[in-house]
Structures are given as C-alpha cells and as structure tokens.
Length: 225
Image (tube, rainbow, N blue to C red; front, side):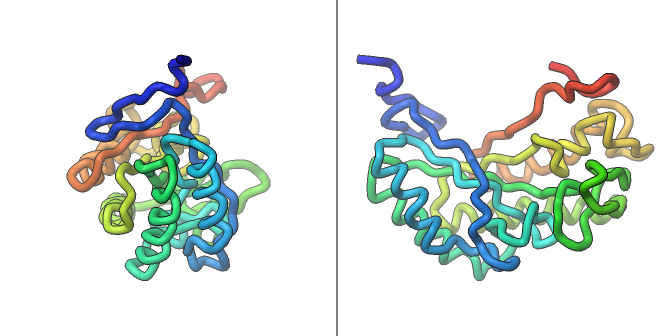
C-alpha cells in the first residue's frame, strides 16, 4: 500500500492518511463578521468526505484590523466560536477527525482600515501606508493571538497554525527588509523573532501548534534558509 494512505501520528493525534488540506483563503465571510457560513460548511466537509485526513482551515484573523480582506474568517470575538464549532462538527462527520486553524494578522499586507507594521513600511505600491506599532501595541497583538487560540480550542480545533509567512505581520517582523526597528523587536535575528517567540509561548500554553514561515526572502539583504 502506498505510504500516502498510511496513518501518521502528529503529537497525540493519529491522522488516517498523509493527505492534508493546507490553509487556502476563500474570502467568503461577510463584512468583518468573521463567521464561517454555509459555503464553509460545504467546502471543508466535502474534502473530509472525499478522504482528506487532516484539514487546516484558512487564515483566520485575530483582530478586525488584522484581516487581509473584509471577508476573512475571524476568531477575535466569542461571538464567532459557535459558527466555528458548527464547522468542525460538519468536518469531523467524515474522514478528517483532526482539524487545525491558521491564526494570522495581515499587518501591512491588509486591505482594511488602520493597517499596521513593524516599521511603517508599505508592502507594495498597491497597499496603503501602515502605522508603525509601538511596544504596547505589539504586546496587545500577542494577547490577541492568545485569546484567539483559546477560542479555537473552545470551537473544537485540535491544533493551531501560526501564520508567520507570506509577508504578513509576523513575517514582516522576521525580515530585516521590513523590520527596521531599534528596540527589543528589531535588529538582531533574536529580536526580530521576539514577537513570534512570545506568540508561541502563549499559544503553546493553550493548544498544540505549528508555525508556517517563509524561509527565504529572495531579496538581497533578506532572510535565507
């Protein structure tokens, strides 16, 4: 039998096969509501019905200002827990009994009002100018990830994936191209990693987690493998 169809253990969870659905945004929530809708309750369970062994639900914002678009899923409010719980119930009817949710913050790569970044650097000319975060605001974002992880666990997600890739906020802190800070959150790689490290500590005290990173900036002066 192909190894693709053999079970695999991830932490305390046994996945029935090696087929996983990665987080892929569909932008089907509505107007900063952040709620999974009927689309999501068909889209994800259909993959579970088709035999996918592990599903990571798409990028889910930890705050409204952390949305990529106004139609992102969210876990910034207790009012969103019930809809996510219903989504997990539908997924777990079929092959996939273990689910994760990707928690993220868009940073300068958001299209919503009041976008923020480590150093006030635009992601590109297509995006608005972001506000530079102060230290208190950085710690508030750590708390938002912690609170979102608590809600994820309450909504019956088994694992959280921290989105630290693709030029979004945590990725902006990690990269020397977008992090020009002169405080404890900038400069050395240890300092640039501080936001992610703090988030990992908080999330890890609540629920099993993984981290998605972009290992190479593909730009001179940026991070490399």
